[in-house]
Image (cartoon, rainbow, N blue to C red; front, side, top):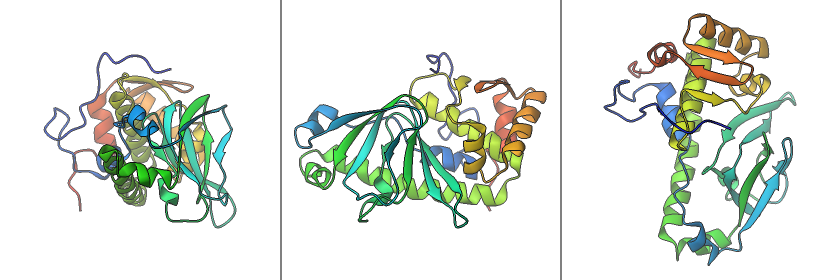
Length: 251
């Protein structure tokens, strides 16, 4: 578990860490926020079901009939797709408050696999009952629209970042992304646990497993972070942000 926050990253424009105007920070801002939905209000209109998953268990597989979206209640999940060569490609991670499955809205089948990274729970929201609920719960419509927009912004931001940043910069940006997510959930952004494996990180960042390990070791040697297995302590926020390119102007 991450530790309760005693200090957090400032992640909004005008803070002491500089303006949000880099690919890395765009990705952080687009990656989702803590849940703003009134579960009890939604329950009056949608037959919600809480689903528990052990580490490695799927919520659903790509190709299964699309029937619901999911709201992460606890734990974390990874989203995986099959690359053209048949390899599993990690395309995202979801934490508490994030919606899962919105990318498959409008399709007959789910477009990806979603797998629990640890013991996790998610609310199942049947579709199209969700659409009907939007008529009675305005914040549901706003949250769903926001989630869809965030998917597009996040995909675009990470695509730009992966196409322009070197390996160490990608890893630094990823750590800042995870830190900002923990901060939004009320935990420390300077001491947290990476729930995903190095292999999953490498897949998401389009890097080799060994490259991610070397990058983490180098960031450790530069005293930007202290990393022990999956436990990360951010020692130099400014250095890590500089490495990730946060504050650099967009081209």
